[in-house]
Image (tube, rainbow, N blue to C red):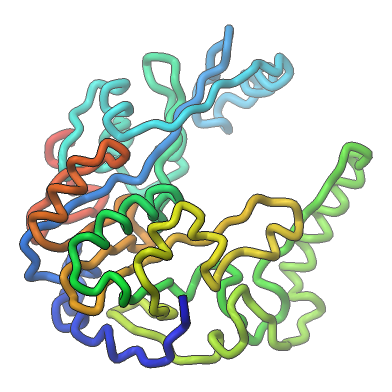
Length: 329
């Protein structure tokens, strides 16, 4: 995968999204395709063995949570689909479902619906926004590659605003790492955390300098591909690279700094992908908990038929806003 400073390849997309934004998926997804498929980002659920979750929110039930923590129960955590949540909360899963209404906590505040206790004893954690699961990136890319005449020539856009992605002039690094070991005392942990927070807040002595990012300085200083209200770093690649289950190991934005601190290899999932023949577009908008694939009916059918994906077909003009779920309202 190679960075491309020529951003003209994406100009056609600007003519097919809503300007100004109209609170539909076409704020980012181009109009005029045969089909639109919504891929729901995976959630998770957890449940303590031989115990029960205290009530939420935490601040209102602090004593119960402290007692729960003192008991140190073993907790089971597993992947969950939106359909699992709907079944647990007695709501209905459908194409325009919204997570907040699925778990019966409508609204825009993730502090209320980010974690919700279901009547069946499971606690559901909300799906991530702006990113498709690493494993599913390769699934979707592999399926999409069979529905284009240019599988060896595709464009991959990554939103420039992900923390630490690009270098910039600033007061300090975009990220800091707080490390502990078994010999670190509680007082030292608190001191190190406080020092990290204070250093970040105070701008590392308030001296500006160039702070490198995950991407090279050349890419960081280079041109961006722009859609309305969003700027992306643009790359060019064969789809086989993203279809590889180990795609995170080869992309230029692999998070090597985190790996140096002992974390597993990782990389942000692409926010927009399209082939040179423009037969489809994959969009994981930074504020959405779903990915939209616009393309031919054949690709939509392939996505719906794959058991690894939780999908629904959505109509052109559909909204993904928090209040768009008219069924569970």
